[in-house]
Amino acid sequence: MSEQSELLKEFQETKDKYEKLISKKGKLLLTEMFKAIFAACPEIKKITWDQYAPHFNDGDPCTFDVHERRFFVEGGECDEDDKYEWAEASSYDPSDSYFKQYVAPKWGNVSPAVIKKVYKLDEKLGALGNDIFESTFGESAEVTVTLNKKGEVKFQVEYCEHD
Image (cartoon, rainbow, N blue to C red):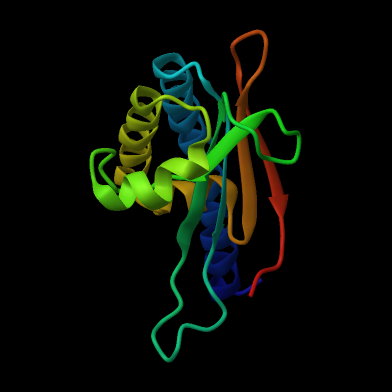
């Protein structure tokens, strides 16, 4: 094998080890973060989101992003199981008139105090940036996070196609 081939092989092996280590460390960090989120707001039963880089961005570069984080909370009336209310978190202040008219109705019977907690927790997740999510779960994924009866954070990742 030539020296270049050997260097290329060494490079690829190092890269693979690095990516596995980054994914493992990312999962450890996110596990602790979600454990804290579920402890801070036990009304949250699951959190889901889609993550991907769009295939088309109207001429702008297509970059990876976490999209549509959804919090499923006790007290609501919609979702596929009709057990939890969900609404996409946003930066709207619960005292804002737009929030009261358009956002709050999506939350059903969930109290304003819980909604406010969810928004603050969502801000913490957003502050992590996108790299950790991409490195941990990969591109084009639907991720669901739950807390099982033992108090363990569980990640379900489904890889998908998107527009």
